[in-house]
Length: 257
Image (cartoon, rainbow, N blue to C red):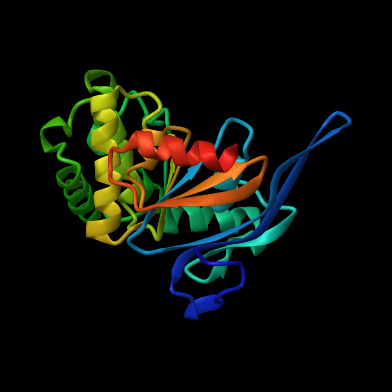
């Protein structure tokens, strides 16, 4: 794990660098310390999980990493660029072109087919029809959904819908893929397929994948798991055999007490 400030700018070997992130919220007279100086780095080809209980700060961390919010202090570097210094519009464009986000609820448009849902990012960017057709076909093949291309979400299983969402997230060849509890709505069989797919994206396609989860089984498929408690990074889990949820649960419990 890299400490904050280990490398800078374009010389960094890391695609994603989180440096000293601090974020607080006010709820009436109460101050909530969502993040308290969190730092870590992720290289290309890594699947990294963020694990913690509800209220640990993991969702806040994902929102900051995705440019959906800005920290009180600290930085988020993606490919050497500090996205916390960008305007709202610049962050939106950067997110659309250099980041892929996978949601728990799939976020597919019900009136569109799988093919049409996948194509949305390039349609928004005004890409040519020929490029869109080629890229969408490549993505459908990658997630093994060629035969479901013309089906709408209601005609697909939850696992198939999430694979459509993953294909859409990959369409623009993003630098970073953020996955927010990507298997929270799936049964165990489909969940394992999604975890294995995310692992393959990292290892075989050299993508940088950051996944937020509260599930030990999900974290077992990660190369590293950063554990959050009360807004602080309290430890890292490594060298876990994929599927060994019991080991992750035991080490996690030791870290959070």
